Image 1 (cartoon, helix red, strand yellow):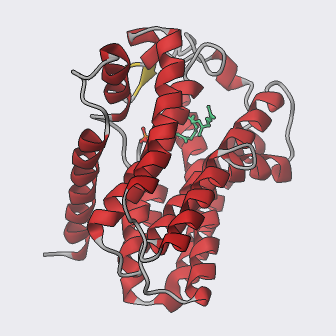
Image 2 (tube, rainbow, N blue to C red):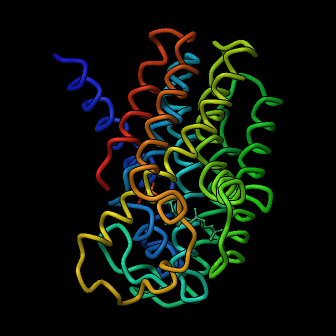
Image 3 (tube, protein in one colour):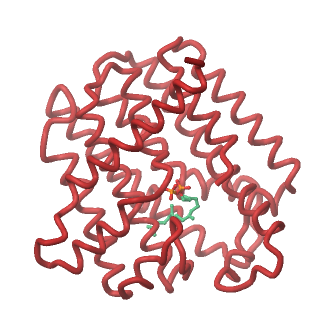
Length: 299
Ligand code: GRG
């Protein structure tokens, strides 16, 4: 089997096992309060690329972690991600009507339910990480909980979102844009990688530092590519106006650098990420494959 096919199979396998694990960890829809539990499952199941679970499994593979433990780590990060999407889509934020190809939670249910779904998914993430051993010792597991909390909170993703909201209609320079994305998108991507690595025992501190650096590079890469894809779909979709007006005021890498320069920057970040991983050898191949997938993805 070619290396590309093998990698695609690995991705499909992790996506499938993440879907299954989330299905087991989310409260069953028949349990009260049914509407909330049903809405949580609606938000978290049956969609998404599962980039963060893939990164957690790839880093865990490098660290020799147990795949069942990695499932919990991967789900914890994905639950935080899904919570952020549900809240981000609400009328008080981006006011989006579609997510992962279906109506957003506040449209399918209602705003109060969407708020509660986000809250409940966030707390479930920490429960999933705390309920059973995910690392070889309890102190390590505690530091993993702290890492996820830091990445999701006001000094991480939620803080990045606040900076983003404050920036609407204002021109950011490149350093400000980078700062915003390192928090808003980058913090959770970096956390996915570090948590996956901490679920295993096989890495020394130098390797951890490399992964930390790689996590920051990939977080930025993800956002630059996201901006490029948004700009390309805006160009391709003639007459696209409804519901996305606020997005056009938002600073992006494409509005700052132009499309060509943004593409060049993405390639530069990929090359840097590849160089960061090189000393880690063949076992870092999955992480490298994911950095390439993130760069070349079309959605
Ligand atoms: C509301 C606290 C709070 C935070 C929201 C990350 C974030 C902050 C909002 C997400 C909204 C968004 C569209 C951000 C741009 C980049 C991004 C994170 C896109 C969605 O992530 P993907 O592409 O989505 O990994 P899937 O659906 O594949 O999981």
